[in-house]
Amino acid sequence: MQTMSPNPPHDTSTVFQLKGSMLAITVLELARNDLDELDRQLAAKVALAPNFFSNTPLVLALDKLPATAGVLDLPALMRICRHHGLRTLALRASRIEDIAAAIAIDLPVLPPSGARERPIEPEPEVKKPEPAPLPPAEPEIRPTRIITAPVRGGQQIYAQGGDLVVTTSVSPGAELLADGNIHVYGAMRGRALAGIKGNTRARIFCQQMTAEMVSIAGQYKVSEDLRRDPLWGSGVQVSLSGDVLNITRL
Amino acid sequence: MSKIIVVTSGKGGVGKTTTSAAIGTGLAMRGFKTVIVDFDVGLRNLDLIMGCERRVVYDFVNVVNNEANLQQALIKDKRLENLFILAASQTRDKDALTQEGVERVLNELKNTFDYVICDSPAGIEKGAHLAMYFADEAIVVTNPEVSSVRDSDRMLGLLSSKSRRSENGEDPIKEHLLITRYHPERVEKGEMLSVADVEEILSIKLKGVIPESQAVLKASNSGNPVILDDQSDAGQAYSDTVDRLLGKEKPLRFIEAQKQGFFARLFGGK
Image 1 (cartoon, each protein chain N blue to C red):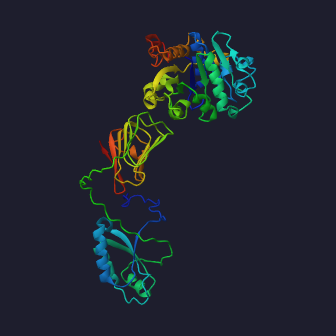
Image 2 (tube, chains in turn brown, purple):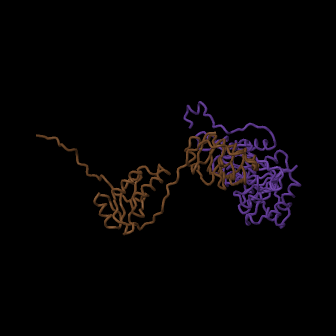
Image 3 (cartoon, rainbow over the protein chains, first blue to last red):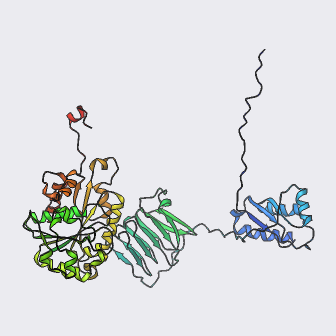
């Protein structure tokens, strides 16, 4: 009598792999045992940067708590963190009672810190660019540098204290620099750096954007990134908001 | 009025010396008294292409350094009454040229010749700089590929900023584009830049397109400028180029891929 094997053939190939990995993680280092104050201060931080605190993985560090800080209510601390969008993954502690509390609720315990850590400040989020009120007309007239001959590879043109206008093409390897805005009416194949002294309101205008690099006030994009933009090759303006270069159709 | 024309490119091996020989010879054939000066000191080739390598006694460096006078160094072409060659030195390097010396020799040549053709070495260093510094016009020789075009672009930048005309605020050097080693079939396959691509990138006036041709190598080996081979495509293309430099309108030739005839297709021509 033949029987069908109830089990599928046994696959013995490896089903997992163990890998070491370094990952950046937020550490909340508690300086003193004052959960009410922590709740208040966390709330203030959350208001500043709500996106930073949404299910952010967290390591609770209690190893800097003074030995005299008294018994810490670990579940209460975790509730506060959870309430503000921080998910506790593990605990770092040196006091024996904290370690015991962690073991009691099955929370992994990490050895005390020896590694380098730096304080992180969630950056305040930039408000969505509202239509900014037009700045009052500036009385001074800044000289605009106008270039009418093709700008060749290896040439560098700097419009100090003002705008730069190029009416012809800019070749690969050429570099345009301006403290103000840059306008290119021919094909733009070189580099354009506007607002090089830090003017974040400077802009770059191109009739045909095929640049090697564009930069405003030090924030830049190179051609490898620019090429992926659907506006590559068309008429665009480049502006800066926060630290993001925006490319929009002209 | 006599003119100094530099033949330059930035990149090596694109056909500067072949072009200098062809254009110089073409101008002499049309009755202009012409001298071709080899600025490639240390790597001289022009005398070979012109077939006068066995008659070089004194060279350009000797004249620049006052070791010989022009009459001693100028080599008269055996084929054409109006054509002369000033060979480069093979034993010296580019530092043997001085700006004052080159200026003096070129001024002297301008007094007796209608056209002074300066065959520039590759690169953008001293030899190339001196070859273009005193020029009135420039023929920028480019192959239809990106690195050659980029180097030509760089050279055009130098022509407009580092020449005597630009430093003295005179009219800029007149720039002419010459595309050499053009291969229409490979352009059609997308393996080479097209004439339109090169023109678009360099945005200067196109004066000629020389097709890739067996005739060029044959001419170089035999010491006869290819323009003298009036049966060859390259020779005819150079001839058209000379006419355009002299202001004549001529349609471009040899820029379309050859269409295969009916019989060639039928009988297995490839």
